Image 1 (cartoon, rainbow, N blue to C red):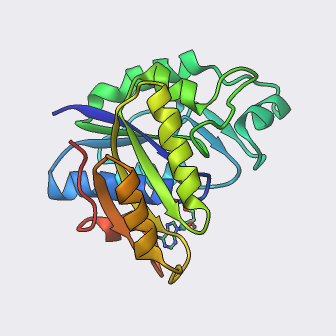
Image 2 (image 1 turned 30 degrees about the vertical axis):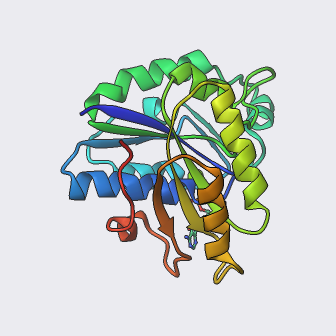
Length: 216
Ligand SMILES: Nc1ncnc2c1ncn2[C@@H]1O[C@H](COP(=O)(O)OP(=O)(O)O)[C@@H](O)[C@H]1O
Ligand SMILES: [Mg+2]
């Protein structure tokens, strides 16, 4: 098996990094796979890349894992412009191609929501399409997530990308009607549910190993 996925979410701060690392720990510990996480564009001071490196069990140069890092916590296209740079999707593809064969499972964490602009003309959706990977959707369960989820799925399907699965991730402690919300999404989505992660007091991917299924 050698598989790579593009992991997106219904927004920024919905648990993409938590679920990405959870899937990497699951694959390495339960399935004994070689795993690698990439985050092509980081904005702000978040430690997404450190978390992904910690959850990976093969090494690769950071310039390939994370070719773009901007410290301003704003949209990637705006952060890049502020730094006098342009995010080049072909360069991201080159970096991905350099490392993809090092692991059995590669997860590419997207940037913000699926259609976040990366430069003047291209969004995260264009990156997913260019890489041509099946997509995993992390749904941050909070009020308003139903429409965000359906819009995200529509946008992925409009690019003719397969959706390998979705993960329900509770972002508000004791969210009202959380099971009804997940039930509604199950009714609407014809996509495998890889896990329903409840609110975590100490969120860490390692704690999700028994709670996530691997996509096909
Ligand atoms: N199920 C959860 N329970 C509690 N906190 C969570 C949960 N999922 C994510 N978080 C927290 O929410 C914040 C955003 O999660 P993160 O994985 O960084 O999102 P993203 O990668 O989509 O920006 C982090 O502080 C993370 O620890
Ligand atoms: Mg993240």
